[in-house]
Length: 554
Image 1: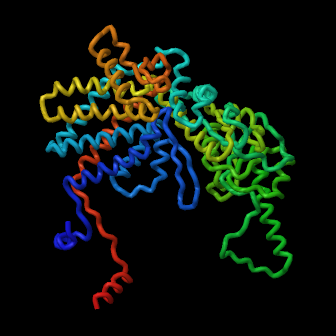
Image 2: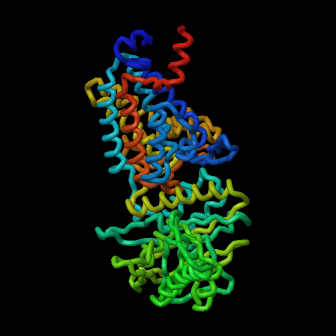
Image 3: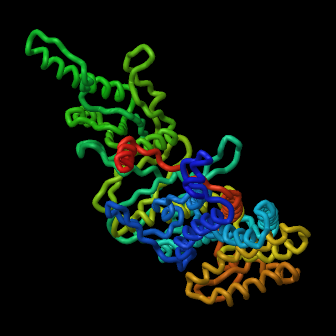
């Protein structure tokens, strides 16, 4: 629309509508998908992201890549949010969900160009998604209890296969399975839950990734404030402070009018005494471990050392909140009660069997074991440099999320493109039974699903057309011949370049990952497909710009 026409309608900006806006949106979505497409699967490649300050990030995690890109296009931002949603809900499958959403949009745009109304396409996509989820739950899902004991180990290995720690997946899988089982708890509804937040992940430079270990307890990347303090405390009573244990300083604007010089020394002494009295109240309440987010003054350390207290300063607030939940204590922000008096009650302190210091490489960590409410575990990651450790952290977190979702849902599906090919075969047969325009949309939905196995083949330098055709034959037979029903679990073997039963091979994924991925990708595609008009409002001009314009006109 011309600027004159836009001004006539009272719109201070640009309007794009109809086929133009759909094409622009699909192009933006495909651009985002093409960025992450080569990082899909166990043979996927990494991306290097460098910001304006020169900070570098190397990763192949779809959500991280898209989050770090400064995306401006509105439709592309929908896919960035989609990857973040998948990461928050499941923790894995972020790359595949973006690729699938972009492919659904691309095929929908092709139908629109063939004069099929977007409403019919949206209705067809909704029917296809509903049928696909139904078939997935009834035919393609296996219970964890029906599979061998190494099922959880295989889930972790599958998640890590495409990551930087893929070569050490046997070592890490054992650590993560032990870790997620150690934090098993029961929620208020009586269900078993496996909170990933209960596993603390610490990064330590040095040695190889195979030196990474699991610690049964909550590990803090902090050490005791003084070497004279005890290295460990049994039957610990923890005071968790979100405040300073340094001499009190008066706030700005407060004035003291004194008549004699000695009063200045008295003020300084009182400032020291206030903090000393607070420490004495904490010790009197029974605290033998003090963790604070603030500092502990060197002169105050003497009182803690004399009392045999284990003190740690500069802790993270997030760590204190988790420790408070685990130990049954409270994060104390002030010692003042309702009357203004400073008191510490024993009920505010957390309890643990022991708190001790442990050395890893050149650094010491504080370990809290035997907490009151549930258990905690910590994974100590070892690596050559910061980039390696950061990517290991992301990989371990994704694998923990996959294990947690699997245990909570008690269901897995075969990986390696098995689910997508099975759903493609089912939906193609189902589409023929729909006697309306939605049939075309369902058929295109089915074809879009094959983008995942095709990408896996391409990234592994294999012939995608040949392998996907073989896989398709196996799934057609599984749905048409009862004696070959087990072929519904067949997927790709990217190492050997053939098809196989991926349930028996141990290539497994959490069932919620696939169901959520399908649902989220469909919703994102429909959201963008509904758009047929875009108004881009111009930025308001500043007074200086208006003056310059007026001078130019004169």
